[in-house]
Length: 101
Image (cartoon, rainbow, N blue to C red; front, side, top):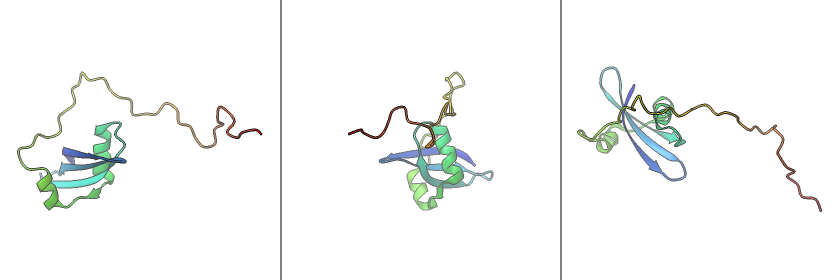
């Protein structure tokens, strides 16, 4: 599947609807949630793991002639998608969490 266009709806999370083409050129629509840090990753995750969105509604949201997803310039600085350090529940807090009386 190749992503073509996407629309984002914000609220508590970012809900996205993505239009994608398969190898035969047929349109497919998917809906899912993204974290909002990297649009390319969010779009690919919605295509891979999102729910199928009805084709009749998708055709109304993405009419013909509307601009698609633009290719990212090769000169653009890359955003790191790897977290440097993740704090886990087993790690010690930096200060005591209980109050002394």
